[in-house]
Each structure stands twice: as C-alpha cells, then as structure tokens.
Length: 224
Image (tube, rainbow, N blue to C red; front, side, top):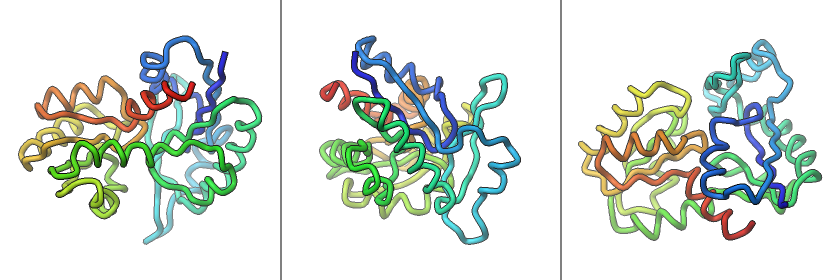
C-alpha cells in the first residue's frame, strides 16, 4: 500500500479534510500526517502571530474535543517549523503533499519532491475560466493578494472572504456575493475547504464551483 504524507501548516491530523481525499482516492493508500504547529499549545501559537504590517497565513489548531479553529500566524515564523516537519514526514512516506494552495519556494527548495497543489490548480482554473470571470473565495487574510495571484488564470477576478474554519453563514454570504458579481466560476482557494462546503457554495450560487482540495485529490489519483 502506498503511503501519502500530508504536510499541514497547522496541527495534524486533519480529520476534516481526510474524507474528501478518501472519497476520491479510496482505500488503496494510507495517510500519514504532520503539522508545522504539532505539539504547540495555544499560548505558544499566540507568540507566532504576525506583527503589524507583516504577512500572515491562516491555518488551524485542534481543540481537545477535535473541533477545528482558525489561527493567523506569521509566515516567517511558520516556515522553519514547516520545513522541519516536512523533512521528517518525507522519510515516512512514498509521496508528500503540501496541504496548502499557496506558494512556498523555500520549502520546495528544501524538499524538492514535495507536491505543491498551486501549480495544478492554476492550470485547471486557466483551462476553464481563462476567458471568464472567476470569483475566488478564501480567508480574508488572502483576499487582498488574490486578484494579482489569479490574474493570469482568468479574464476577470473578484473575491469574497470566507474561512473554511468559520460558520456556514459566512460561506453562504460569499457564495451570494459571487453570484451577484456575475462570476462564471467560483474557486475555493484554501485546502481547508471540504466537499460539503463546496456543495454549499455551488448550491447557493448556482455556479460551477472548484475546490483546491478536490482538484488536488483527483490529480493525486493519477500519481498513486
């Protein structure tokens, strides 16, 4: 059986995301997970928050009852921990996936065989929405940069903020905003979004809805 390593920016295991991968990949692979923030308590994670004007990344911690909650951490403080966790995980698996739709050049240089979903996601989005209007839904901390990041993949890009770790109401509002903006496609641009959330956005907006998570899982199907 092939072992797929899943490297997350927050804390493992990501039991919220595993069902999406399992539904597509089936039982022929085993999952092994590590997170950059594994072993840290809430107080230690609080010391990783971005300073004023500093770039931050939203990821998740796990409560004792297993409920996922979002946390914003500074990228410069997260990166060394992410590289260390990735190197440990690389030795334990056959393929290694970054559970994030962002770019981490330093991480890729440190672990060359790491699979970065963003490359595949951009190609799929460009093939579908290259001449259309794409609405990107993701954490508020990512939305300012989103238009520039996706400009080469769609003729027009708009955004609507909603965290995968927030409530359903925010997701519904974002879906309605996408419809009102006249979007042709919606992209859930965060690997934290689940299949249930994708269906919520699709059903609410009435628009074809792409998910970074499910796109990645379907490509992995060809590799494993």
